[in-house]
Image 1 (cartoon, rainbow, N blue to C red):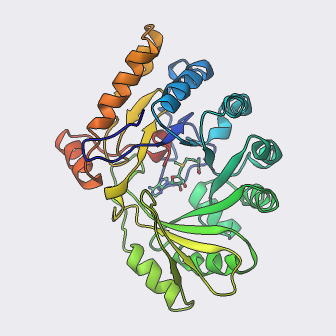
Image 2 (spheres, rainbow, N blue to C red):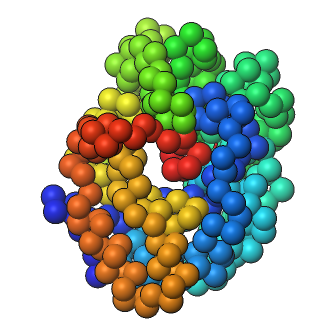
Length: 328
Ligand code: SAM
């Protein structure tokens, strides 16, 4: 079985947010005073998540990313990950985390077969990190990064580039890849701050690239269908760099992603609203076949691209949610 949308795109990559709560308050993601988190009783239980993952695997999902909120703020996350690994439902397992609580679990994540971990890190300066996240946690994040680098899990750094905030960190990150086998990916800031505010996004992918090219010679690595990252090597560097045109949306044409939120909300496009929630189906005794049908029928109507999805959302008077409710 393969999940396909009406544009013929095969959807084989599931991003599952296991919570909307986070232990950081990055201003581009989650308003500092935000309290409107889902009540715990409204989250899919781990049993329901496992059922959802078995159904997804039967629908042809082969790549799973665990995200959040911050995945590690959900109680007993490792029990869920152990169950996922035990059932070998997917070809590859990935996670996106802020790294604050991750380091003690890296050996186990390695044994569960996690292939890569994206670590969200927007600055290597402790003061700037605290300014962006409102928490003084850079030392714990760096210790996670070190542990990842000496594990078999591929480490990727996700750095959101924000005008007048951390653009002077770009070259430090690039320099970091000289001695470290890490992929640093610069992401355009998107309007997912939960406030409806449009970011002053003057640092788009072109600007980021030409800024780096003023100092380093970038050798392009070809993109594959479904890739969102333009990747580059720099001669003599152990790691690589990437640029993600997340706000410019240059890659929607080959999108292979499906997002499911902590309440079982299905979102077929990052820029759109959630399409429906599976929560009631799980709680009202729907069969696996019915749930699979619902997923397939929603995927069929995945919007053509992020611009179309955003326009229908604007037409419905909804503004973008916090990324913490979507998972990135
Ligand atoms: N808590 C985890 C973390 O920090 O990696 C996972 C969830 S977080 C919402 C997932 C990713 O979304 C992070 O890499 C974060 O930087 C990115 N993100 C959040 N808000 C964003 C925004 N407005 N623009 C671009 N990326 C954003």
